[in-house]
Amino acid sequence: MSEEIREHRLKRLQMRSMRRGIKEMDLILSAYAEANLGAMDDAALDNYDALLNENDQDLIRWVTGVEPTPAPFEALVSRISQTFQGQ
Image (cartoon, rainbow, N blue to C red; front, side, top):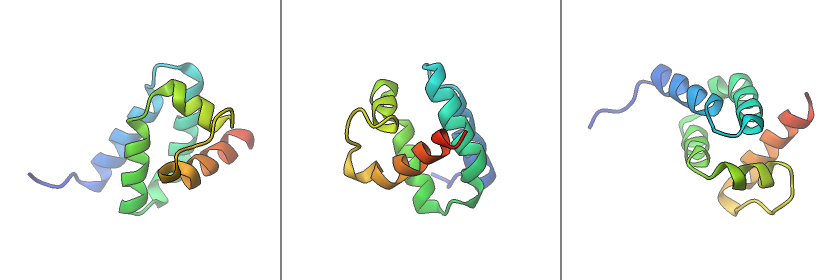
C-alpha cells in the first residue's frame, strides 16, 4: 500500500473537516483545518485524522467543554476550542 501524498492528505482532511453532519462542527473544524493543517507534522495529522473519526455529538461536547476530552485528543481539542472561541 502506498503512502498518501501530503498534499492529497491535507485536501482530504480539509474536506472531512467541512462535511461533518453537524453544521457547528463543519464551521469549527473547517476554520481550524484551514488555519493549521499546513503547519502540522505527520504525527499531528495522524491525531487530527483520528479525531475526525469520532462522533460529532462527542466532538461538540468536547470542544465546548460540556464533557472532558479523552486523553489522546486533549491538546488538539484545546487548540480547536481556542480557534473557535477566537472567532
